Amino acid sequence: MVILSDNCFLKDSNMKVLVATEKPFAAAAVEGIKKEIEGAGNELVLLEKYTEKAQLLDAVKDVDAMIIRSDKADAEVLDAAKNLKIIVRAGAGYDNIDLAAATAHNVVAENTPGQNSNAVAELVFGLLVFTVRNFYNGKAGSELKGKKLGILAFGNVGRNVARIAKGFGMEVAAYDAFCPADVIEAAGVHAVKSQDELFQTCDIVSLHIPATAETIKSIDYKTVNQLPKGGILINTARKEVINEPELLKILAEREDLKFITDIKPDADADFAKFEGRYFSTPKKMGAQTAEANINAGIAAAKQINAFFADGCTKFQVNK
Image (cartoon, rainbow, N blue to C red; front, side, top):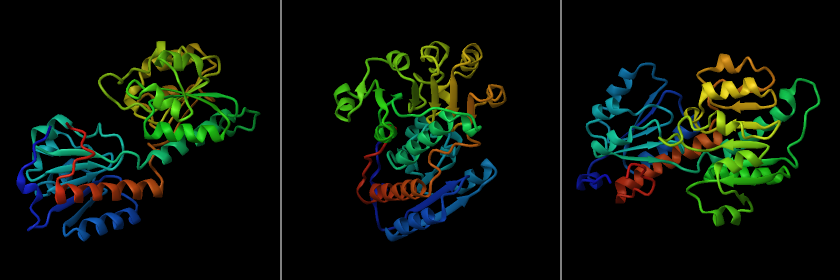
């Protein structure tokens, strides 16, 4: 647990808040962040579209708080940020923050869960309709209605995926090692007993697991090979959870399987050889909506203000 020093909450001086985004927020999001930060009597500085890490290292030297998107806040960045007290990732995933380094520097690390969840869930179905209609190649495809969708991890995104799937008339199942079965069932979703059962019994499996020591490369040959004939695997979670060499192997062996993702694999050129069975967006697209962009940015600003106002660490992830 990060121990907070008393001077984190002194309001007799303004706090300097950096928004560091290689891929900037939408203009409306920046305006909303500015309104929140400056409205609380703090100073906002922007570092947008930076091209070198040195620019980031220079920008963090004297800031008290920092908002990032997919930008890397590694040990070197945290070493350079001598005054930093809190860093907030505008989004759900936070594997781009070195949590151990943050804790070592007495920095609170937070995310903004739920702000991008509907955007990611809607993308899942945009990709799925595209896929079952044979990537719009002019040939007859199939419908999602009546298909069984398996959701791996029943967090904010998983719950939204389930909600939309019901509108398509799909049968929905889920597995989450950290979510009680009765909570899943209460949402009108069938709770299966294991990840293996999810893959064995669902036509489509949608991945929503974080990248952790336990999940990295966990979606492997054995796991994917359990999908029924004509199975579809969709990943809008993290690239690292896919064991790319083993997924390539099973796709080569089983011509009935399809893989779609909004995180371009390292082996994209090899996956692209499976024409008509593989698709990746050019870059990660899950949170790329105006609404998600604005929601996540403003939520990050509000969390920083709450931290400086009364020490609130509700969304702290380095405990």
